[in-house]
Amino acid sequence: MRNPFWARHAIGQSESCKSEGMSRPKVLVTGASGFLGSHICEAAHEEGHEVHALIRETSSRQWLNQDEIHIHVADLGEREAMTALLKDMDYVIHNAGVLATVARDAAECQRVNVDITRVLAEESIRAGIKRLVYVSSLAAGGPGKGPQARTEEDPDNPVSNYGRSKKAAEGMLYELRDRLSVVSLRYGMIYGPRGHNTLGFFKALQGNLVPLMGLKPLYSSVIYVRDAACAAVSALSAKVTSGSVYQITDGNSYTIEELCDSIEEALGKKKRAKRIKVPFWLVMLKAWWNHDVRELRGISPDQVRNFKARYWYASPEKAVRELGWKPEMDLSKGLAETVECYQEYGWLQ
Image (tube, rainbow, N blue to C red; front, top):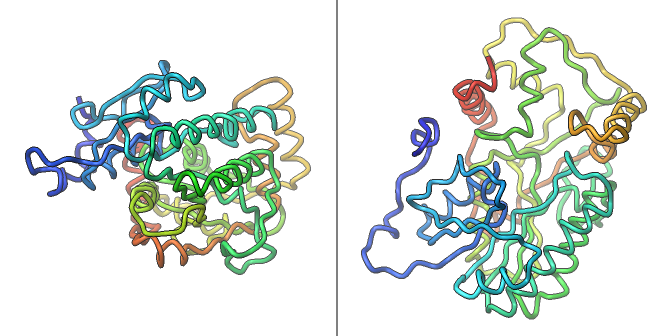
């Protein structure tokens, strides 16, 4: 059964899906039960694909409409399972991976983000997959050197374990580019309905005091989740060179203070929360405490390394030019929809 918010905000079946007997390209979406993955499944379905969602046994199916999406339970690292599943597929969108928020160390990032991706890529070659779209991150390229927009032509310099693992996965896929058509998408911070990744920020801004990392401005790029999902689907059929890398953002640069202001506006707050700037050494101390006592709350040391770099403004111009995609959502409207979702699910008061 669809939940009310899902039903109200999902777009109806596309015209290309309505023709009886029409053969639809089959796309496997890994990490399909999560925030971005569930939106990718919807976007792919609406574009006329037959969508196959790969999830783990423990994954929630809350956001997956089983009337429209085929669900498969399997371990990405098991070659036999991947062989059986991929033999009937046309495309793969590889969204599964360990996030910077939960990764314990470099070894875990390597195992999940690189080694398992290698298994999927090798089995995709054997299955004759037409294209694999890899969901990467701006962390793979690293920060810019100043407030100007970073482009794909700038040299890569990841500063975190997470970023280095995503860069390594991109590099591994690039080496396979003559045997498997691959496209890597480097996403900015994704926000929108269903996203737990930004929920803590919204909750903090409901109060009267909010701590901000660093004593100097931090510049960030963001992308609304629906736009992010559409970029992945567009990359499936775009006529681009195998091994290409694209940055996916809304094209704007925001300081953390500006994002705070916009979120408070979406929350309908009349009184602005006081911002308290916290030096990075203190934030890192707290992050290492979380890490050492094996807590999964708060910020991780890896995230602090990324934030300390300050400049995460990235241009999507190459993606707009080559993928037949462009970001559509205005920040203020996207944040308003995010707040509506959070409130409807009881995540925000």
